[in-house]
Length: 357
Image (tube, rainbow, N blue to C red; front, side, top):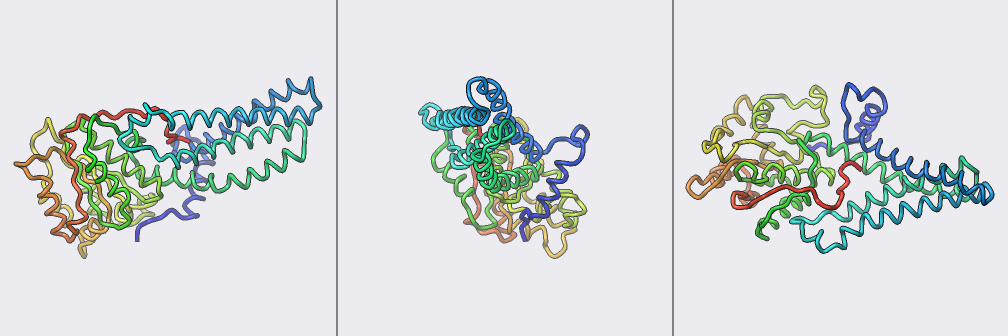
């Protein structure tokens, strides 16, 4: 059974984020999200309080508090509309993307931010001078924010569990040219609803294969699929481990993940020699494996393989695919993408993709 995050997991993570000192334990994505929302709340609260102090010289306390909250709320609404629609409507911005951003996901994040801004403004309004209007509006917004808070906190848990080496979304991956068929191939892997799909990424150093693998897996994590990112060397050791989530103090092991990213199997150019061959990899899979458990998991998991260079003479793609078909993977579920011919330079998208929101 592939692992999903439960309510018990959320409560445990929330407890860890709220209790303890991050000066010695580090900061998680979930903790960062909580702090970010408190910042949004404060950006609604503080300007409203200052506005109330100014407006009460000209209006009654109740009117001043309501006008201040309304002005601050309208300001943040205007700001977020510009922040969202500007890049969306910009032809230059759209043309820089190989893979378009998930605009619906970003719109939902924008709405979530606005609710926190408005909650802060209304809370300040109530504390400055109580009005029934502000209280009713605050209660409505509090109810509305419950689902977005749950969704985003859960999403951050799915993003932090895989231990990605960096935060990178698919729309941030850029290259000078890539054929439409290769874009469709990546989309096919992303939109696949079955288990057991395998994507091979070949290329030399700086071809963008690691960033592309992380970007693809990140998009699937945002869709609440359990993922694990690991290097090949670490995975070789994990082949020998028992499948015990609690002992490892993790949400899921590689055997319980829906998505597995295996990075650095071979370095690629300028190192010409393949450190790991398909035959050698399979020997690690089978060593001390009881009941073919490692083969079964690889056969039933969506895997992104990050390898070195491939060319017609070496036939690496064919050899790795033969290894997987030999353990029972269907040939129709094997996809291969060679980045060797693409001049790929990862760039930060002009639009803020809000990985930290």
